[in-house]
View 1 (cartoon, rainbow, N blue to C red):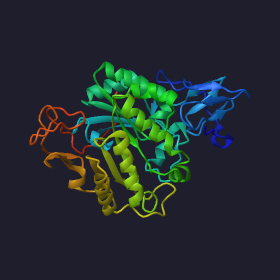
View 2: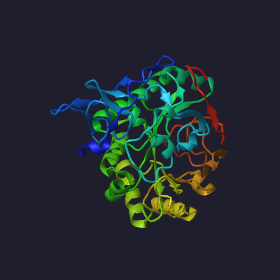
View 3: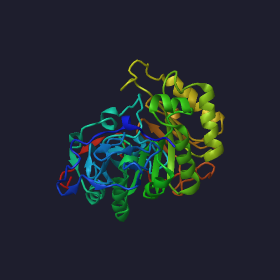
View 4: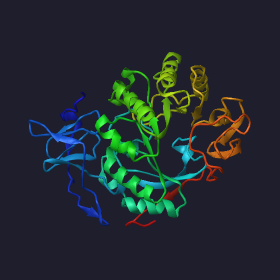
Amino acid sequence: MEVCAAACVSPVDSLRVGWMSGIATQYPGRFWHPTEDGRIQCDLCPRFCRLHDGQRGLCFVRAADGGGMVLTTYGRSSGFCVDPIEKKPLNHFLPGTPVLSFGTAGCNLTCKFCQNWDISKAREIDRLNDAASPAAIAAAARRLGCRSVAFTYNDPVIFLEYAVDVARECRALGIRTVAVTAGYITPEARGEFFSAMDAANVDLKGFTEDFYQRLCSGSLQPVLDTLTYLRHETSVWFEITTLLIPGENDGDDELRRLAGWIAATLGVDVPLHFSAFHPDWKMTGKPPTPAATLVRARALAMEEGLRFVYTGNVHDRQGGSTWCPGCGRLLVERDWYRLGAWGLDPAGCCVGCGLSIPGHFEAVPGDWGPKRLPVRLQSGGV
């Protein structure tokens, strides 16, 4: 058990922030228990932070208060935006459709290479400018024509209660939900969290314990356990993303072992995305990932048996498109986030050879394209 020590907690200067626009910003948290020494242990993620009253966990948003646990960001967001679903990235889930994306603040990992550090590393609640109830978010998604809502920008695991409530409201209106997550969650909590989700993209940051410990202050095994759980115990559609960092997790041996584990444990049809690192946060001294590295990683993963491997953050029509593993036909052409040729029949099968392609496809693809539409939700409205 990895127990978060005192260094992982911080004083709660404005814990009792009350209500904003009728939305609770201090909300009873779940998955915790009192310890024998009078502290509260958070059981949501494998950090198991032990907190004195008035302290926050490493994630910054879960806090001990009055003998219990509270979520301090319920009903508040760092912003809303309508994105293409391919940006999550999800290539086999409602291609071409718009998704209403939002996040809050904080994170339960400390990745030195974080590409969203201004949100995930935020330490000021005042950064959360938008307020919205779960019902308001679901209603906004429907009004905006979004087929799904994505919990993203920072990890939704740490705002589980808010994400689950939003997901329930979305399902009542026929809106799907997507978790973009590092999968760093305990077995006790993941059942409730993922039962509310229709799809997920799980960030598998590397394939060594050293990488997770040294660069993320975490552990690899809980993430592998989450992926195994998703594949064998849920109906959640999920895809995997690995950000390749030069000299850290881009070696041939590690890439082959990663892809081989996915093929053997999760199956050859789980889509894998390799994306490009750019210098940021605490790793500004590293060079950007060359496009050739992503192309090489894709080739190695396919040699290990994976049938749907993609490149991201680079312009690569071959690596960004979906190809039939049966006959080689182009099934979904992608030019960045814009769809082109479509080779699937209404049942999601290749029009050339009839092979059923795993995923959630509609008879007609969406045409949202690369558009990005910032949205402001205030007092429950758009």
